[in-house]
Amino acid sequence: MLHKILTRFTAGALSYPTAQVKHVNKSGVDATADGSEQKPYLTIAAAMASISDATPSKRYVIRIGAGAYTEASLAIKSNVFLIGESKESVRITGAVSMGAWTQDNSGSDDRSGFSMVSLLSAVDLNWNTAKSRAGKIYMNEVVFGSTVNMYGYDNAIAQAQFDSCLLFGALTISGINVGVFTNNVCYSNITLNQHPNGGMASILNAAGGYCAGTVRFNTTVSDFNRRCSGFLRGMTSENLIVDGASSYADCDLVSQGKSSTQKLNNGNLVAINPRISHDLETQMLKPLANNSHNSGDWGKQWYFNFAYVHASAGTEMYLTTTMENYDPAGDTAGRPIWIQPDGYGLKPNVSGGNVEIETAAVSGTGVRGKVKINARELDMTSSKITNLANGTSAQDAVTKSQLDAAIGAIPAGLSGKKQTFTLSAGDITNGYVDCAHLAAADTMMLMSGGVVHVEGESYTLSTVGGVTRITFIGDLVAPSPSKLLEGDKVHVQYLK
Image 1: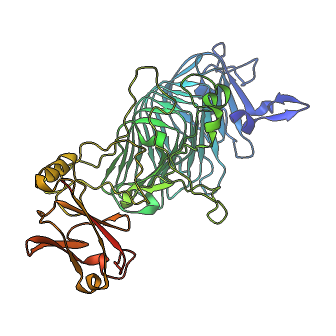
Image 2: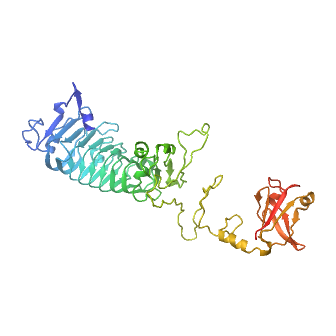
Image 3: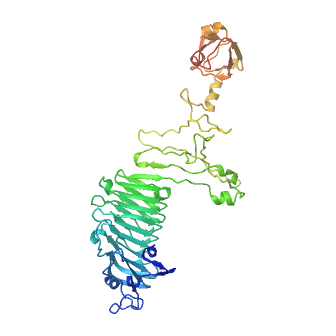
C-alpha cells in the first residue's frame, strides 16, 4: 500500500526520485553519509534529521536495511515514510513519537508511516504534540513489541490505518479515526477512550484479524460528537465491552466476542448476524457422500437473517425468511423456516440431537416466558407429545392419566351404551332432550354434525325425573355453524 502511494512507474519499471529517498544501512557512517545507496546513514535519527523540506507534494522515503537499530528515540516527521527490508530482519529499539509536522490546518494532507519493520519500544502517536489537525499515519506489516497510543488534537479528523500488523502490547485510541484496521493480530487489549475535547470521535473500523484480550469502548459523558464507535466485521476477540451511553459497537456475529457481549452504563450494541448458507463443498462437489444432503436439497435456504438487532433499545429479535428476492405479490407460497439438528444425517446407531426451546430462568416473583405457536395447526407427523402437566382449566390439554381416571369413574352399567336423537321442533323450542338413562357428570360424550362438544360450553347436564337431561347452550343455540336445527341428529355415548 505504501509503495503505491510513494512510488511512480516509468517505462514499466519501479523507480523513486532519488533526492527523496534516504538509505540507512548497518554499513553506513552518519558523518560522511548523504543518504544514497553508496553512502547510507548508520542511524535512522540521522536520516530523519537530514530531511527538512518534506511536504504533501514532496514526500520522502527512508529505506532501512536488515539489522538491529538502537535509537535513543525516534520522532517521525510529517510526509516521511520508513520502509524496512522485512519486518523479521529490521528491528528498531527506541520510543517512537510524532516529531515536527509542518502542516496544522484541518484538511491538510500530511502523512507518514512505517512498513515492514519491528518497533520494539512504545509507540506514542500524539497529534496534540505534533499540532496536526488532519494528519494520517499508515502502518503496514509492522510488528509492535510494546504499547501503541494514539491521541487526537483540537477537534481534528486525524486518521490512522493498520494493515496486517502484529501488536504484542495494548492499543489505545483517543479522538482518532482508525478508518482501516484490517487483518491485524493483537495479543493484548484494544481500548477506545472518549477524548476530553468536543467534536472528536474515537472510531475503529476493523475487518478480519484477532484480539486475544478485550475490545472495549469507554465513554463517561453522553456526547455523540465525542462518541467511541466500532464497526467490526470478522474480527474475533475474547471479550467485547461497550461501556457508556456514547459508546457504539456495530458488529457481526463473529466480532461479538467469545464471551457474552457486556453492555455497561447504557452502552449501545448493534449486532448483525450474517446469512449462513449451505456448505458449498458438501452441497455441490460431494452430493452423493454418505450422511450429506444432495443437490436436490439446495432449495432450502439455511441462514440466519436477524437484520439489525438494536440490543440497546431492548427490541425483539426476529428469525425470519424475509429475503430481498421474495415477492409477496408474485410468489405463490411463503418461505418456511427449518430448524434441523444433524442436518447432514447421523452415523448408524447414533441418536440425533434435540431441538430445545427454553425461556430464561428467573428469580424472585418472576415467571418464565411462554412459547406461543400461532399457526393453522400443530402437525406432529404421527409423533406423540410427552411430559404434559395435568390440565387444570377448561382450555388445557389433559394427560392420558387424567383421561383414564375420568373413564374409570363412569358407572359400569352404562358401559358402551349409545343413544341418537333426531331433533323435533319441540326439542328446538324447549332447548333440551332427555336421555334414556341416568349418567354421572363428566361421563358422557355428545356429538352433532361430526363435532364433539364440550360440557359447560355447548351443553349442560342435569337430572330430571330420574334421567339425565341435556340442555343446549353456547354455539348449539347461538347463530353459528354448530347451531342445532329441526331434523339434526345428536349422538350420545356413555363412556363406560
